[in-house]
Length: 138
Image 1 (tube, helix red, strand yellow):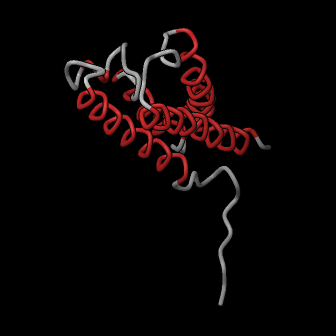
Image 2 (cartoon, helix red, strand yellow):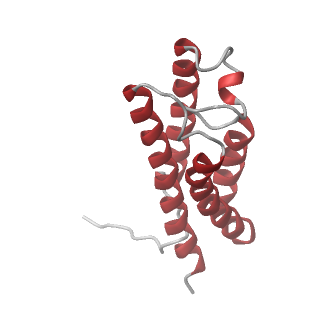
């Protein structure tokens, strides 16, 4: 039986794309919860600037574009994309302090969902940091 090992940083694996896929799924579920609970009037409102349980659509689009670039073979694109993903995850956490997201009147279940979503953003940020570190290795 033989095994093949690949150099770190050359194969992005599935963790980072899977993490972004999880975030997108959580965003859509969060928008549905927000609409159902009356936190937002429409589904699109729940994916807009006043979103409490999801990321706004522009952030979701940016995550998809960045994950494609960060996991691509072109190092010149992958390095800045991975770095931006690290920053985006941290900004998703910090923004809640400034946009009123953490002060919003939410039920316990909604607050737990919000914590899970923000934690997932930080997790994707950590995965992007690992990818960045691998890309920067000599």
